[in-house]
Length: 263
Image (cartoon, rainbow, N blue to C red; front, side, top):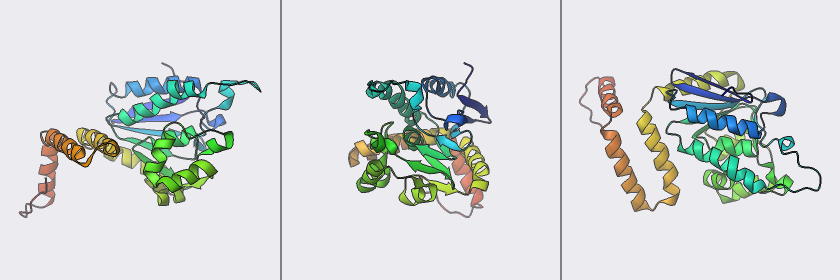
């Protein structure tokens, strides 16, 4: 597929998807959803070990492009169908990818664009970026997983405030709230994202995959079920080449002082 609304590239195991409608703040259209589905399906065949998602221009993603729906005044549109066909499958695919996914939020992340970022494993924002849930301004609820992600990230009260007030949250404040992983100075942002992507691309892919699965399973598991899951994943990872190489490298770094390892 030749892409019109996104850019896609893979280098040294690091894949990058750039939402590429800067004139519309990279807002979602039906075409963009189709192209994202295609790009995400290519990752395994392209040997991607980490994925970075970012936006072109001065914004990350402003959510749904309302012009794309072309709803005439007084007419109704089935927003539930849009969620079911586009937004729900998108965030479910992101969560299910067996590689780390970084949202590199370079500007405004609003509505579905904000929650698309929150679906990623690590959310890193430039200092000039911001996050907002403007659904309440339109008489709607946070979609694209927002009603799921928000209370788990920041707690019920803060989730209610974000959802019901729709205030713009600067990146620095978002990091303080625990909404995102970190806020990085604008002039260091690109280099920081590139370095992190390289680090994750060189890391233990199986371990990352099972870490994602274990953490995302925990809210719905009992304590005993989660311990059992940890045991199963530890058994699998313990037989991997990544573990053997990691132990050897750690012992070498210790200078063979006789120190023992925890696992």
